[in-house]
Image (cartoon, rainbow, N blue to C red; front, top):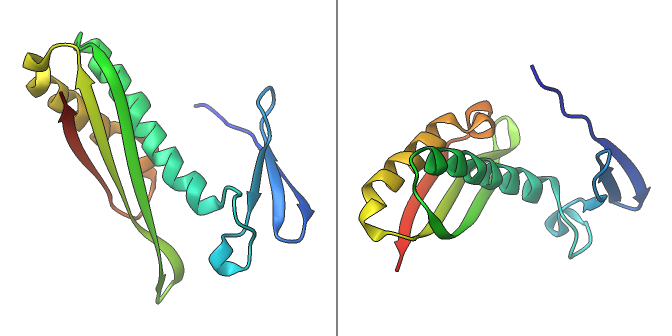
Length: 139
């Protein structure tokens, strides 16, 4: 079992900061569409980013284990928040990962590694909303 401890402190209005020992503070706020300020990370941004980051770190593990060398890895994630009968819920997160491989003949192995990352990402597996991973290879 592992634990992860953060502190969240209200600062002003609809803003605060989240802190984790030994790491830089992150300013956080209510999303602008709900009256929060522009330009500050929201819980929805952080959740979407966390899923994309978890998939990336899982992918790095499986790609490394398969001895697949990356030249670059980029991803874009889109989280959808909707009004539902249960209230506002994240209803989906879609991650598109773009991989540039050192050896393009390893695409099939890289695809399998990415599929393993998608299946085993602990954050994705902890959510009720579906998480979809799209994979593309850059040349």
